[in-house]
Amino acid sequence: MRFLALGLLLLVTIMAFQLNSDFNSYYAVRSNQHAVVEPEEAYVGYSCEKVVVKVGCCGSSGAVILRIYNNMNESMHIRVELENEIAGIEIRDEEFDLAPMSVKEVLAEISLSPGTYNASFKIYAEFENGSAEIFTICSSEITVESPGQMISKVLLSGKKVVETHTRENWTFMISVENPRQNSTVKDTIPGEFNIVSYSATTGTVTIKTVGKVKQIFWTLSESGNLTMTIETALNPAGKQEFTSTGCYYLNEGAELDGMKTDSIIVCANDK
Image (cartoon, one colour):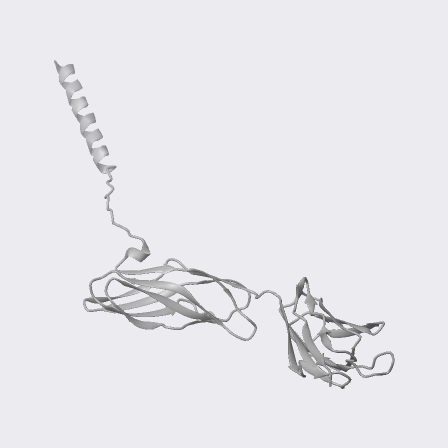
């Protein structure tokens, strides 16, 4: 019996020690759940935009860079700022009132160099029962592309209807925007005309004479203008062009990388 009693006492002691050990190592995890909505579905909602703009060398372009949603049943006053200022992005309508259950497109003037930019925003909202200060968790991606190459030609002075056997002159201008590096503009002046003068705002101009035809080569790497003045020439018999009635090309059309302008045409009538 003594041994049985001693055994029971030892067993109770071990169990008490084990229970005490378990209690000392006990830990608990508290579970907590929140309902999360997309930013545009919140009371003061917003959505960032993906924008692609082409900005010329002398101007800016407007674009929608953010949308603000009022998902409440009361009006609110909104102010929008860039979280980090970016030179070349100016928010056009940074402060406005927003009616209940409506959306506002936030416009910006963009005058940036070609590239991709990311703009984040701070939104301040005031309403009857409170206010909110929101840092957007998204950013608007703004991609600025260079305008494509362009070439045009315009007659600056001179008649389009003239008389035969009469000396006349014309001035026209070829304009190029955003050319590739060392691009070459080609044009041809027919044999009925002489070149009086020419000047280019950029690049170099080379003129080659084949017979009486003048071939123009204007090499440039940036936007610019070529202004040229021509006049009616003498024909091989020494008589003043135009010696017969009809319509004549002043030039054949300026060409750049597969693009070609229209020709300038004048018509001659008998005196």
